[in-house]
Image (cartoon, rainbow, N blue to C red; front, side, top):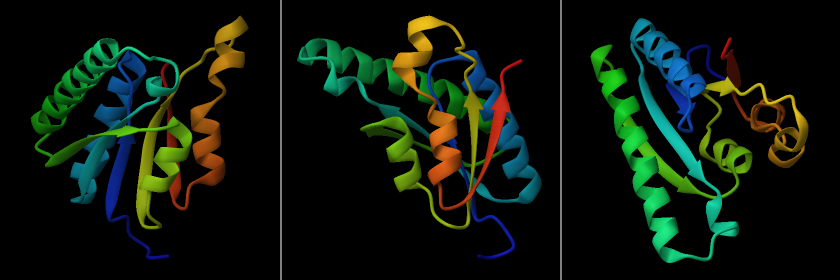
Length: 139
């Protein structure tokens, strides 16, 4: 492993917690003089059979990726965005390389069915990623 990070990966969804992670990630990218990539993983294809609804969700994801890209550009950071299809934790881990730094939000869903159904993407990424992971708390 090299001593320096080559790229920051910021996995996001359409939440305030992700917006905080983007701000912290692009600030760090600017400080280190490295590029960053904002990604989102669409896992709805396994639950939705409607092409129309799937297309709307894709457009919504592209819209919030564009919003996050504008935040990065305000910091003066060259940013790329990408929409990936699959299971979030698995796709984030597959996307990461050894010399990356992943900066992601932790969603505190500690109640009921949300906790059971969602699992914990940040926990799984920390466990399985080939690189360092910085988890940003939303509170």
